[in-house]
Image (tube, rainbow, N blue to C red; front, side, top):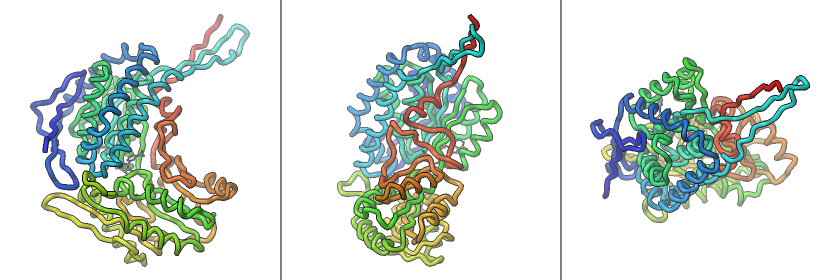
Length: 479
Ligand code: NAD
């Protein structure tokens, strides 16, 4: 197998030959598939310098000119869809069809924001005196640093890159240690697309050193992070020193309410996608289901039958629906959640076990349904990040909405009903940033993705997504 060895991409150059390597391993086979440098703070500093130098010229360009470059970048990503998807499956484990879907989704942020930059409008506000005018304008924030997770190796980068570059900012990305190769492919294509040197930089290496370096340098004006809530909290503390702007896309714990009038065929199709995509390792993964008593037995039976059709294995092989978990910690957490639920009375209707090869470092967990779930179980209170779905019973919608909201998280929630009045009440009652109503796949470049409570700060995607990279300034004019 061809291994992929990349250097860091700073100021349009590939650097970092002398460093130790971060070794990248295929989670489905344990094979060593490539490496990136394990750089120290020196590279973060070089990237800050490059991004600062590139900023004046990039931010001065017209939105249409920046859009042209981004459009070219989009085309190149789509031309290389298969190649990027294969690398993604090798380093992340998700089935190839899902990786292709992610490349398309990732590219859609570049395409959408290539246009959206043209719609950064200001305002003219009536003054307070006869000869007074107020002009409100928006300008790019400046140099932005980004830290991203392994579960969406491409999309979590482009969801930041698209709006940041379109707004006129320059960017330094630190990809995750588990899946940096997809990001390096994206950097290579950025170079080919003619994104000017220093506008997009990638620094692999120690995450703590990276965040300390960028957050203590006044030239960096914003940090955008996608990852776990504990790391997000650490970054909030670090940002206090220079009052750095932050966008945080953090953990979730998505509830699903299935009402007695739901179209169960559609519910099951959507629930399968919302739960088992990426082996359940998505921040908006359905984590717990509340099914109304009269349809509960049927839902459990039909979900069990559907889950039994899923094939688990190496995502590069044909017919695989569910790949491995990313690492041992993820596998152990899945096991703990199932054991705890069983101790507290849950019934495993399918799955309930994993297969670990500790020598190779591969960890697969069987898609699992836990019936008779109750609110005391850990899985009903914590993000699982694995292919396990607990189903609890409820009687009244108010009770289900209350249980759904009883968590520090507020990223995504789902519900299924055909009744518009009932659905309106439920959607208004849920304290979540993203709500899927008869929909298990709510993400889209044009929608403002993001969470309430401890699921984060700010939004990515849509009109709101570009505002995160803009400063508001007003000119008070006396004529
Ligand atoms: P993680 O927080 O461990 O790592 C994410 C990134 O942060 C990686 O690049 C890592 O190198 C870096 N990092 C780790 N420790 C750091 C530190 N002390 N300082 C600075 N950077 C540090 O999260 P993960 O395990 O990679 O991702 C899974 C989590 O991400 C889940 O909780 C999931 O819900 C969340 N997530 C959220 C969204 C969203 O849009 N809200 C999307 C995807 C994933």
